[in-house]
Length: 138
Image 1: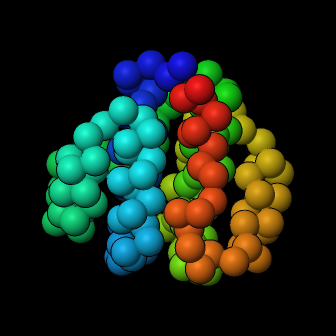
Image 2: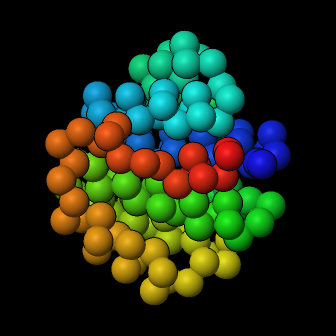
């Protein structure tokens, strides 16, 4: 089970990631609501936050540090899925995920291999995919 701080950092990190390429797609918004709900946050809170994401300057952009590597790995997987859902890996998204991997001691080879795999997935319906956070919340 995730700590409250890990759950908050997880969602905050995905919110930050979603706005780094200057666009937050409908798929990303829906995924943020789904992941936020899985983390125990109210769906309406997540939906409102996702809608106001571009204008919200109060969200800290410092990379989240998780209490254990398992959470960092799950976050990295979900962040990559979200970042690549538009089939583009914006340089700011790449740097953000790289920074998070580094502070959570995740090898670059791990997340770059995952990025390559996810890049070629059919993202027609992002919400049909399992998110790594689901494993952590069981």
